[in-house]
Amino acid sequence: MLRYIIIFSLFLFVTSAFAQKSFESLSKERVLLLETYEAKPKKAIRAKIDRLEDEILEYIQTNGYPIIINTITTLDVQDKTYPLQGNVIATLEDKQEVLLLDKDKYGYYKIKVNDQIGYVYDLKMTPSMETYPLNLIEEGLVQKKAVDDLTDSPSAFRIRYECPSVVCGANTPAGESCKVQTRNCNGRCHLH
Image (cartoon, rainbow, N blue to C red; front, side, top):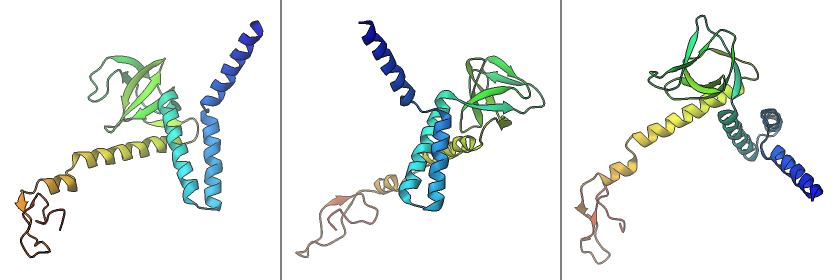
């Protein structure tokens, strides 16, 4: 019985170790894919790189990315984002290391400091590792903003359905005028 418990524990440990890749292994895999892409630019490799970068970004948002704060004065970390009117949960000093989790569209950084998650505006930082994860966060933010802009702006579909209902202006094959009502802006129904 003890043997089965030990084997099962070992199995759980091995599967959990391989279930979530570390940041370093994801970064190494990205470097290899980028080198392969530079040698032979193919869409499939680019798609793998994009999927891997999404995985890296998800890893950062879950586990954080170490950065070093550059500041002249102390920065207050608050428990709420825009507008910052929350409680101060920590104060950041120059050259202090924190974990960067995300950035919102207003410029507020979500960070983890002293095992607490808080928000800081317009953070000046020095990455303690490579800089591309910071670029991934910025690109993700730009993509989110583009999607938000698309959903907030009137689309072609909304414009099409805002046209008044009219009788189709086309003629049938028999030469009679079509009697179908349409909201299509060109005045023709789906048959014409």
